[in-house]
Length: 249
Image 1: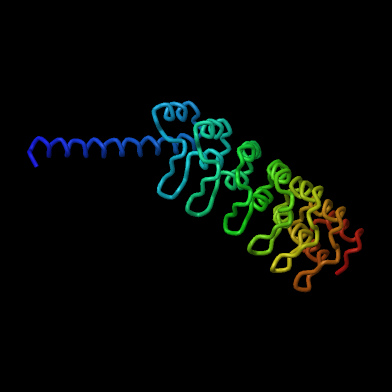
Image 2: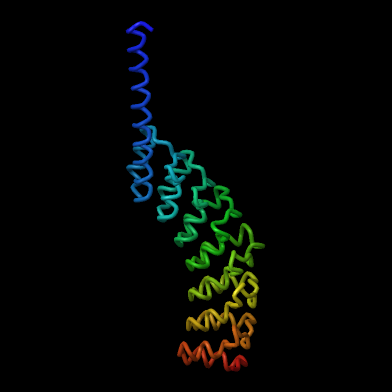
């Protein structure tokens, strides 16, 4: 190969490598800006050619970072510029699952409006489970509109969204689930019910709502009654409610 041709080939290869490096740096900057809610920077980077659908080595996208951090305006901008609403990173997280986990109801509603796949799971947990565990009543309400028949879905441990919300003491989430006919007496693999979990945690508003919806006040786990769990927790109001509902040791 003549020297001039060889030199031209080397120069072309160097230019391609430099361009690829610049693109990666730009995409990394977009990922960081999205995570930090820097809308002006996000718009600038997109205008310079950064790709809204880009991802890092682990599959994290700018939209995932924005959704998980609750940056609604950044998420909207990314979606308008071609971000993939159903992208998944290596561990199975999607923008919707991240927004549900972090209690960002506005982002969840936006993603659902963009046809986010509600059937995706992370380690056996649905968007319902993650919303319930984070106490996001708005998330649950939006999800129920789309897929109410998943209200009683169990995770890998047999836990329903209602059980998770009751265990954490999120009364508003518990009430949304109960209003939409969540099964109140379902048990997990290790034999918890929502009422047992709420009583053990001393979550009186959850206990009140569960009893009003037909939770069994005589339920036991490993021989320990709901009433005894409440007595150990030491909240007299919870104990009184249970006794008034017919709970016994």
